[in-house]
Length: 297
Image (cartoon, rainbow, N blue to C red; front, side, top):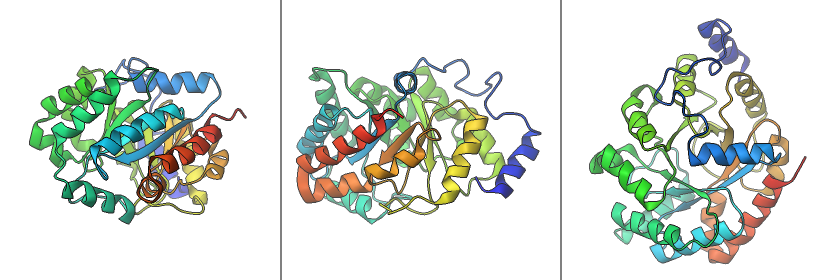
């Protein structure tokens, strides 16, 4: 976190940790009672980082989505982020936007995604990765928040990332998700203000999605130096696991994050691999990323 923002947050909270002490938000007392929080706790105890790839549901079809989930599970990934195609996504770069377009052209519906995921979960022979829905709030509202969360849980989802739902408007959704004993993942960016940081950490559950750069998703050769300062500061303020996304695309980017981040998220590189090389190519990239994340220090 930049020095100016660090100072403003510390002034705003008068030196108090944003996390330590009694929690007063919707997730008060829910620290290790969700599948995602338990996964991160187990990995931390083993000295490992989490790896979470992103795939787009229905790209190019739901049969491939099911195959990708199974392949990623076989490679030992810890979580899988599944994007619900949306015609007007925010913060997604051209690779993921194109995947959404391909899926929407096939008229993929929410219930189709739930049925696909449920089918994979019910036939899983081994412990499966945690499944996280990346979904626009407009989709949630269209279905109804309580109904959407209930259907997602029944299908096998363990948490939600709702990128267009600001933390200061997320109390109702967070309460619904908490009641289902799932996680509403919060995002924090390099440009996040002091007041918003406080609210985000109040609501944070499962893990905190740390956006490495301002802008849209997409593979990058290097992660910005300011990211490491931000992670170090956040580590001093919260016990919620930190997972870095936006820009992570290759195994060698994991090691510099060790000790600061608890997990890494790869989106565009996975989606591009699926489009260009199919399930096998995704499996190869996932194997390399998982090995790097699970490598003991």
